[in-house]
Amino acid sequence: MAFKSILTVVTDPAVAASQLDAAVALARREDAHLDVLCIGVDRTQTGYYYAGATAILTQEAYNQAKEEASATEAAVKARLGREDIRWGVDSAVAQIGALGGPVAMLARFCDLVVLSKPYGKAGGPAAEAILEAALFEGRAPVLVLPEGFTGAEFGRRIVLAWNQSDEALMAARTALPLLKAASEVDITIIDPPTHGPERSDPGGMLSQYLARHGVHAEVSVLAKTLPRTSEVLSRHARDENADLIVMGAYGHSRFREAILGGATRNMLEMADIPVFMAH
Image 1 (cartoon, rainbow, N blue to C red):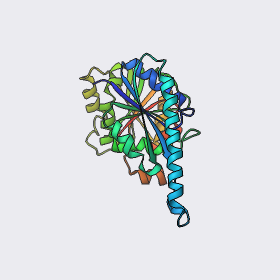
Image 2 (cartoon, rainbow, N blue to C red):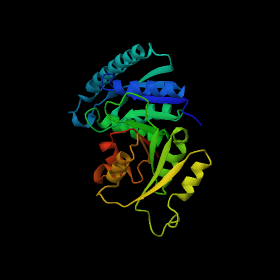
Image 3 (cartoon, rainbow, N blue to C red):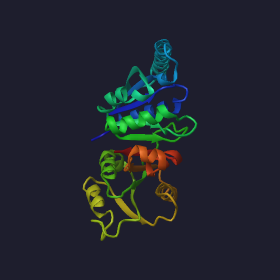
Image 4 (cartoon, rainbow, N blue to C red):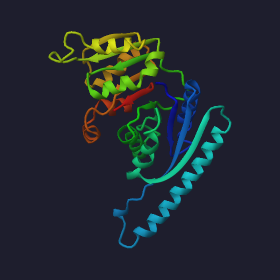
């Protein structure tokens, strides 16, 4: 399998300029078709308005979101018109609580979704909702880019986070095109359980599976010497000079991670290199 259909979602062409540049570069590198979904976000909160105002405000908010979607679509088409890749652009209008519909419809039929990380200067509730829609409703892997990342030069040295979970296995499987092309893959295990099925050979079965696909991987077993698993993983990635992290996403519920935190949310907040996630 290769990444032949790539999707990226844009709500503001100015904010997403680097994201779009990276998606174009990756589509060229993979000889893939790039689809861009331009969304006008209707941020109406109808429950907060006095009686009688809802219909007027809803229509006004919809019209504004539609204008934003049209303007974004025009800007993206102008940007892609000078590229030599295969591409298509579509637009939609959705309330912030219903972004899953248009995103999932396209994400279900693509190999990879490219998005900027949803936390930080360019993030927000809409960016987080789009990422979660691609992962959960679209069932697509997502490549999350750090702020300002514009190229496709990543994936030479990969840290693959492994904790025996279904999410980590799905990430390893869907990332196979990247893992096969990498010069080095480090299967990173943090505090493996002493009574688990891999207690005598942590990461051994995954390493064997990858080797049969032509991936040369080494295994690193690390102690959790920092408060958060994501901090240990990020430090190890820096020590290995890695340019990509592959990991499973949301092993706990999204609600729990939003309130209490978790490896996925923490990694999305602190990532300074691309992160490939699957659920």
